[in-house]
Each structure stands twice: as structure tokens, then as C-alpha cells.
Length: 401
Ligand SMILES: Cc1ncc(COP(=O)(O)O)c(C=O)c1O
Image 1 (cartoon, rainbow, N blue to C red):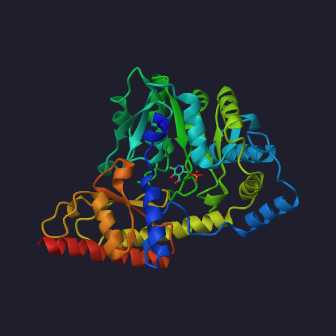
Image 2: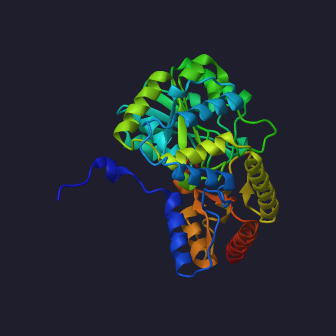
Image 3: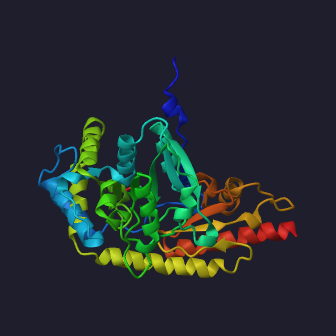
């Protein structure tokens, strides 16, 4: 047989999905795994949203829609962008995609030419570098630092811009670090983007899950010029506990939106009609359940940070958004004795096999020496999981001494 495409062979599996799948396999075999690995809320989709989706089925919303999505949902997205970010968009500039991930894939597919360099602040979500490579671009990882709360600063970016740089992928709040950039912190980054004539793909999927007193503003709101060169990506997956419904969206300049609609029309066509009605219900309903979930996440974050402080040598920054802690475990690597792990992958393997705890190694996010803990899980699981982590890390240290 002739070989598969280089593109397909070059794509790495997602580290998050790989660990999640292993944890699920073990659970299916009856192993009492606690997973603090998953990147999805443990809450169920709110009842009104489910009921509106059932009504959509009975109302025969079961046929094809426009490739760009149903008009009512695009209008609801425009209202959302106006209310949250004071940004004006026409529904024709909104494309409804199969989750934010698909929105990012669409955005990169219309922007990247072979050889284009794409700036990705690191640690970063596992998918960005793989998608950039998939579309023929070169990912350029720009380190951010724990000492600065993993916040991207213009001075971090500047040295990585070359004549081949086409765009920046901004993730605000960030997965895996939970760092967020407020409007003042975004301003110098926007200035740099304008100065170097770059595009910006702004992944704002965690925008609602933010613990700062003021809600986040998109970098697109910096100026009309910035709005024109920004592709905002967001969706309902995380904030409305709707990961499985697969609805995301992009908001971009009219000519960019047309290119995305053409691409989507020839590839997936559109996300499920019924799911689009569920997302419409989410965006047009009240936000009580979102507030309740965000409050619960904040309480879990505070609990996790307080409990982890008891582990000497473990460094955790306090994240202002998303539902992850990114833990610096360098003190627990390369220890003397039997429990000697060279990297986070080995440590996470040990946690899974010997302590039945699933966490994601930092390598998948471009950050060896770190592990990601998701607190989007029940309070009971979080407590048990953190206790298991404490036991394991204490054991590593006592073995070494
Ligand atoms: C940073 C980031 N962007 C996008 C997504 C994907 O969102 P969706 O489930 O809507 O495709 C995720 C999911 O983990 C994410 O962490």
C-alpha cells in the first residue's frame, strides 16, 4: 500500500485525550481511578437548554442549515459580542462551527500558507501547534514564565517576530495555566500586532470562567483596526456545560468570514441543527447556571490551592481563569531512590498506575516539569485526588531522603 499523507502522519495525538482515554479504560476495568485530567465541566447541561433542544427535534429542526449556521444563533452571538465586548458585528461575520476547536481549525486553514510562522505563547493548548503544522505553517513557541503568572507580555513576543510571521494565537484565559490578560495587559500586545501587520486568532472559549471582578474584554475591542485583523473564537462548550453538543463560533472581518463559510461548506457543512438550537437557548437564556458553575469552580480552585500549599516543593500559581492548576513539579523529578522519574510523563504514569490518579503531563503543553490538574470535577473527587497526589509526592521525597 502507498503511505498515508505526510500531513496525517505528522499529527500527534492529543496528550489530554490520550490520558483521558487511558483513565477511562482503567475505570471500565473496575480500577477506582480519580481523574483530574479532563477539560470539561462535571455539571450537566442546564435543563432549559435540554428542553429547548428536545423542542427543536419535535419542531423538525432536523434538516440542513446554512453552512454558516442558523440566523437566530448568529444574531444571538452578535448580541453577546456587543454586550460583553462592545463589539459590533453583522450576522454575516459569524460562522457557527462544530465546537471552538473546529472554529480554530477553520481560522488557521484560511490564514496559513506553507512556511508562515505562527506565534503561540507557551505553555499552550495541545491542539494549536499540531493544527498549525497540519496547515503547513511553522509553530513558533513563545515562552511565558511562572514568575510573571504565565502572562504574555509584548516584550516576550517581540524577539520572535520575523518577516515570515503571519499571526499570533492568543488564548485568554489560557489552558493549561489559567492565566488571563485584562484589557490594559492586552494593549501593548495589540500595538505590536498592528505594528507588524499580523493577524490574531483569539481563542476566548474560557471567557466566562474568569475570577477577576471585571469581565474580560477581547483584544479585538482595542480598535477598529484590531477588530479587522482578529478572528475571535468562542462557544458554549465550557461555560454552559455543553462540551458534547459541539457548538463554537468565529467572528471575523466579512471577507475572512466568507472564506471560512466556503471552507466549512465544502468540509463539514455545518454543526447539528438541533445543537444550534440548544446553543441559541444557552445564549438567549438567563445566566444563573453559568454564575453558579463559575462560583463552584472558584471555590474548588481556592480549596485546591490551599490544600496543595501543604506539599513542600510544589509550586502552583493562582490562576484567574479557566479551571486548571498548572503545577511545577520539578522538585520531584530526578530524585534518588526507587521513585526516580525523569519527566512529567513518567511521573503521571506512576500517579495513574500506583495511585490511580489521572493528571496531564506538561510535555503536551510544551512545558516539561509541570502537570495540569483540572478542578472541573466533583468536590469529593477533587479532595480524594489531591490527597492521592500528596501521598505520592511525599512518598517520592521520603524515598529520596
Ligand atoms: C483553549 C481551548 N480552546 C478550545 C477548546 C475546544 O473547545 P470545544 O469543545 O468548543 O471545541 C478547548 C477544549 O479543551 C480549549 O482548552
